[in-house]
Every structure is written in C-alpha cells, then in structure tokens.
Length: 442
Image (cartoon, rainbow, N blue to C red):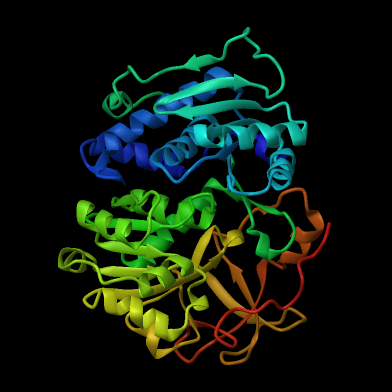
C-alpha cells in the first residue's frame, strides 16, 4: 500500500514548517481554544510529545485513524502522526459504526486515536472491522493505550499510560527536537463525504497539503496578523488544510470555537479579536438568521469566508451574513477533496456581482473546461471542470478504476459542470456545480 512506503522527504512538510516557525517565534499565538490561546512553542511541544507517544505504541509508516472532536488535540495529533512518519486518517466520529469499520479496515489502520467521548464508538468500529489496530485514548496531554478492543492489553491487565505532560511543553521549540529521518509520502487518507458517492478516500501527499495551504493563503490574502475563527468539522480535510494548516503555515493563528451556536461564535470573536470568520453553508445560514453581533465583534472582523459549498446559500442569505459584518469583505471558496482544499476564491464583491461564480483559480493551478471527449473548450462554453497542479491527489485508495476515470491525460476530471467567464474566473452552471456523471465503481 502507498501509505506504508517510507522515503526521505525532499521537501518541507506542514509539520516541519509549523515547528520551524515555533523555533523562531515560540511566544506567538497559534491556536485559540475557548478563552485561552495556545502559543506556537507550546503547540510544538504538544506535537513532539504526541509523536513520542505514538512511537511508544506504534511502528512508523502505517495509517493512524482519528475519531476526535474539533479541538487543539486533533490538530496536534495530525501533526504528530506526520512527525512519527505515519499517514493521518481523520474520520467523522458521528458516522455509523459500519461506515467507520469500513474506513478503518480499508485504510489498514495500525492505530486509532480517539477522544474519551468517542472511545465506545471507536471500540465498536474496531470490533466490527476485525481490525488489529491499537486504540489510543486522548486525555489531556496524554495518550492512554487501551490495547485491542475485546482483547487484553499487550502489556498486562492494565492500560499503559504514555504520559509526557510533565515535560516542558516548549521543549521542542527551544532545542529544535529530533527531526524525522523519514517521512511517509502520503499525508492523508481523505475520505469523501457520503454525498459524493460510495465510500472512497483520496490519497493526498505532503506536497499536496503544503501546496494547497500556501495557494489558499495567497488567494485569500492571509497575513501574519490574521486571527481566523473557523466554524466547521476538522475531520473534513478541506477544512483542516484550508483553514487550520493554511493559517499556521502562513504565520497567522486559528481559533476553534468548540460547541455552541451563534452566541458562542460571537463570544469567541470578541475573546480572541478574530479578524477572519470562516463559515460552512450550514453555519452561514444560522448566522444569517441570528441576532446581530456586538459592536466589538463587528469592528474586529475584516473578512468573512463562505466555504464550499457556499453556493448552497441564496443571495439573500449571503447578504444577511454580510449585513452582520458590514465593514468586512465577503469571500467564497470552492474545491474538492481530490484537490486537497479550495482551488478558487471569489473576492472583491464578485460574490454579489456574479451569482454563479466559483472564484478566481488559485495561483499555480491550471483550470479548464472539457467536453465529453476530454477536449478543452473556449471560455463561455459549458462542460466538465478539469484541473492540473500540485494540489491534485495521488490516487484513490484501493480504487484503480476510479483513479483512471478521474485522472486522465494529466488532468483531474472533477465530474462537475461549469464554464470560464469573460474575466477568466470559474463559474458554475445553474448556480452550483452539477455532476456530469456518476462516480465510477471498482
């Protein structure tokens, strides 16, 4: 399997970039959580501690699944898996047991990290999959090895606690920490949302992740003084890369709001003086119908991003979101799991001037429109959206037929219909991308 191949890294991974920043700026804010901020040096310390905990329980080179809530622990565990030399497999802990079992088994996960509230779900999924994976429970700064569900722990009757909390959290930033001698080339098994067809995962490389993070930040106009509040599930790799990793790589910081409605979002904006607000379609619809934020929150926010699929919102809903933050710029992004994250961003009023817009393609990407025979079409003609560039996935996991159908002649065929408008921007057909065909089967 591709995820099990270890080779020296010829480029910087997102983990190496973020930890490198921590060495230079250990006291800079990185992750906001509730009413506190985790400094960059402390985050690097958490990453090192978790990587050592993974190394104590698992060999490098395999896949590590994660059933975790949207917390700093999920971010630290993802980076730690890469430092350990493993592939991260973020999963939706709210999925049915059968779906989780299928994904854990298909990814050949050798370990599963679960928050305490998801341990029963993880155990049931491992039993259903018949998986020999080791279950590690995330509790604070510790990873508790729970062994293999349904079997005694390898080390006796009790679970072994890999407890590194007593170490100085900023130790890695202060002395650099041991760099990984080898890096698994595959960063993610990124499972597609159920609405995209059958259970299928895109194999995303570290080069995909860094390329997507950098291009997204440039297209969005991210700066080192940005503080972004991202409302959305971090098991969705598009959110994890496009919001969390893109911000940390570019030098900004990210706030995770935790559970709660619009009031909680407004309070987090005030507490962390958030400059950017990133919303899913569902989150934007709730904000549009909620009471207006406080004046302090309104003054703080400079950009409001409607994430894919922002086109599910009506223009009326988008205007209502804009009215909540009248001084902020409204942006909209579009992308797919196979492209690691967003590939186009609409800015500078285009969301309202051009209702069908998907945005301007990100720098360094080639986006075109193809006819059913794969020939590129002139601007204005409608066809299938195709893409070339460093953000395109390596392949689908264990699905060669689907891979051959999606990756043809150097182009990713998205299966979505659209066109290139007179400004060179990507636009959808009929207000949102529409499928040109069903997903191929393997």
